[in-house]
Amino acid sequence: MKISFFSVICFALTLTLSHAQQGSVTVNQDKKIDALLELKKEMNKNETDSERYKIQIYNGDRPGAYAAQKEFNESFSEWNPTIYYQEPNFKIWAGNFRTRLEADRALKRIKRKFNSAFIFKPKKS
Image (cartoon, rainbow, N blue to C red; front, side, top):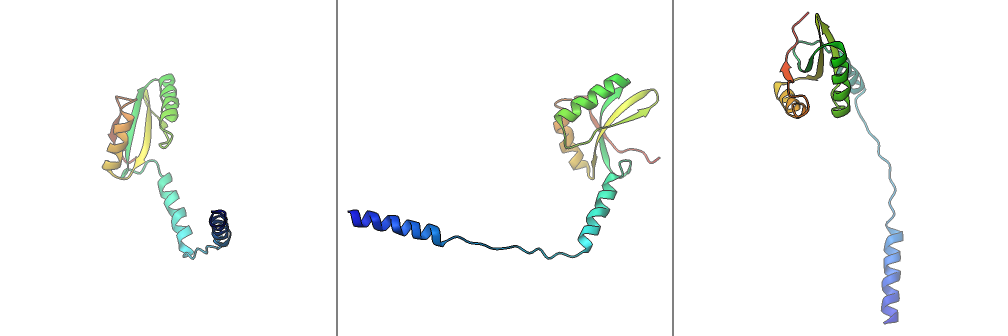
């Protein structure tokens, strides 16, 4: 019994020590990929692109707008809310959605906290 137990322990240690693997990974990618990623970042910065959908979460006075923006940031950090002033009201717009479906999915989550939220496409300025 002692020999078989000792054999199992030696076998387990041998397997553990002999299966250590080392390696390295080399990523080969086209240099144009970095340029495309930078271009995409620049395109996404264009918040007033009329081909994108946005969600309005607030419309009212300045203190209410700042309070709504803070509350939205605390609840939904993935969409950056922006304050816009259209006389005489302040509006909070969030998101920059490429498709109506993306905006609908976001609106479903947002309406749980901001029940007056709605989707719109900004007009070209």
